[in-house]
Image (cartoon, rainbow, N blue to C red):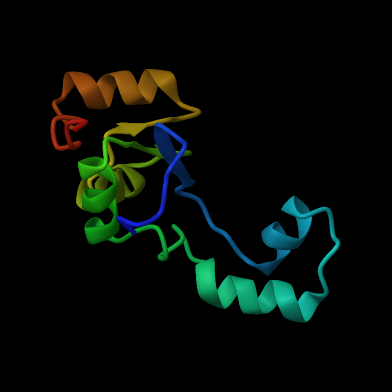
Length: 113
């Protein structure tokens, strides 16, 4: 990836399930089910495993990108964010996240480059 120019400052990806149904919905239902199923095999998961590579996250951070994990609403998803080296998490449960921060559970997030 060092040869690819990146125009963004932030790389964000969902922590929740990505499957063929969600892919089809997000693309306006324009793709056949077989293509959505193939895309699920390539980029699907809970969270999507294609993005859950600590090596990829480290590479992007070295290039100066912040890594945001979206939809972190459980201890398990917070553990994924820490494991892959996310620099920030976004949640639908701000009071819960505040308690996680108070308990030091956010201290394991990576520092931006």
